[in-house]
Each structure stands twice: as structure tokens, then as C-alpha cells.
Amino acid sequence: MHEISVLHKAIELAEQTARDNNIEKIAYVTLEVGELSGYLPVFFEKYYPVVTEGKPMFDGAELKMIIARGEGLCLNCNALYNIMQQEGKCPKCGSRSKKILGGRQFTLKEIGFVE
Ligand SMILES: [Zn+2]
Picture 1 (tube, rainbow, N blue to C red):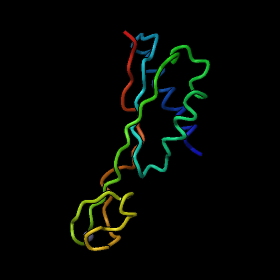
Picture 2 (cartoon, rainbow, N blue to C red):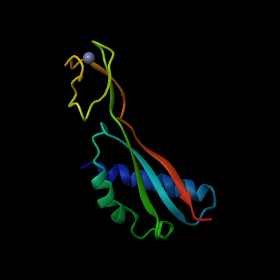
Picture 3 (cartoon, protein in one colour):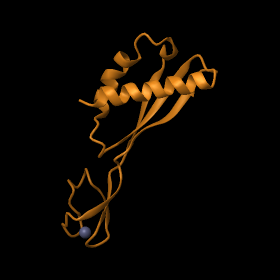
Picture 4 (tube, rainbow, N blue to C red):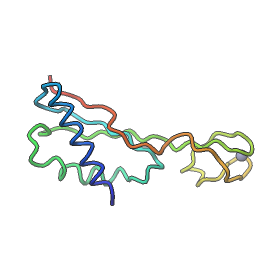
């Protein structure tokens, strides 16, 4: 359960960014969560109210998430495929050797401010 600590860091970063810009209220934060990051979005939803509790800046602020697909490039036949859907195996040739092109990231993508 590492979600709570990375979420905590993302919220702190959002807070700091808001302060640096003299913003008093946050409307929403958007996290980008890669399918292969090892983090489960359901836990971010669960912990978000806990992590933002007692932070007036986050009163009524929404948590949004973008799920980044875990894309793999087959090193055997060059097919591009979704690693999660295909369970790590190339749908064309069945090879498991691949280059991971995306889906490992966890980032604070966007902060929406209340005007
Ligand atoms: Zn292949």
C-alpha cells in the first residue's frame, strides 16, 4: 500500500504550487497513473479524503485521474500492444520479450484553481 505516501506527496506538491502562485483554493487535481506503475487508482480514491483532510485549500476539490496505458513493443515481431490486456504476451506471435513504452508513470498532471 504505497498509494497513501505517493498521494500525500502529490497533494503536498499541489499545495506548494498553489501557494507559490498565491492561489487560495484548489478546484481539482489530476493524477496520471500508469497501468504498470503498481498503483491502484481505487486506493487513491479511498485515501484522497484522508490525505486532504484539514487542508482548507482542498475543500470541495475533486480528484481526477488519467490512466496511462501500458504499451509494449514486441521485440520479436514489432507489434504494439496493451500489456495489461494481453497479460504481457504479444497477441501476434506470443513472445514475451518486449520493450515497455509507457504506463509506468505516476505524476501530478494538472492542478485546477478556483478563480
Ligand atoms: Zn510479437
